Amino acid sequence: TDELKRTGELVNDAIFIPHLVKTSHMSRSAAADLGAVALFGEKYGEEVRVVDVEGFSRELCGGTHVDDTGKIGLFLITSETGIASGVRRIEALTGRAAFNCLFERFEITNSLSRLLRTPADKLSIKISDSLERQKSLEKALREKEKSEYIKFADSKLKDARQIGGVRVLAVKLDNAEIDDLRAVCESLTAKNRDLILLVSSIAGGKPLFVCGVSKEIVDRYKAGDIVKQASQVVGGSGGGRQEMAQAGGGQIERVDLAIEKFYSLF
Image 1 (spheres, rainbow, N blue to C red):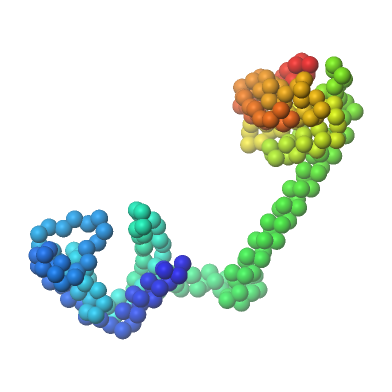
Image 2: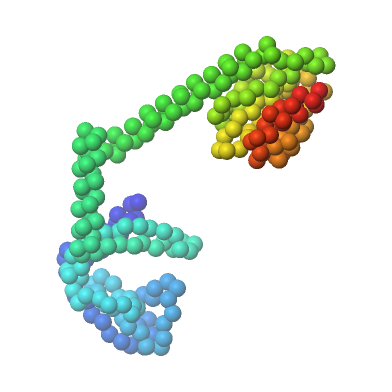
């Protein structure tokens, strides 16, 4: 962030143009009169150690310090976290450790530059563009997969059972996610006025179900009630809207029994 950059520049300026560091012991009241800054959350006794970085800062501190800021060599912030409301904590390296870290990052940058055939100062743009292209391709692939699932389920409509004036169909899909199941139900029930559809899949080692009911027949059949009863067979539960509802479970081996239960509801 800009604040971290300014902090790093401020500290390094005080290193590159050396400041003498003096320490002294005095009462807390005397230190307060001098304007010494106490660290957040620290507890101090009646006598305190004051570290005065000439022309830069004056603080209460019990740590070990150099007698000249120039001896620090280099200051490199490595992380920033929040520790309380409005309070941030930074961690940094100094001296040779900071140099080694910078050198490692330099090597990584050069390696990426060669790998991506891009100048170092253009790497962020190159990587950002690549990630956007990857995201776009992944989205296109997902849409293609959904289209294929819909096409497959549509081809199974000929196997639907005619029960009580409606068509009832259960379809099993391979490796489909819950979004795919919803897309299939939404597409097929929108195109068919008399369809009750249960679409199932195994994802993440667990069975998934989505039930869709054509809006023209939701006065007689509720998707939530149907999927809830079917999923109980696999040790699951679910719910949702009248037109579409979803459920999960934990017993993969009972998926076929859940589908039998689905058909038996009509």
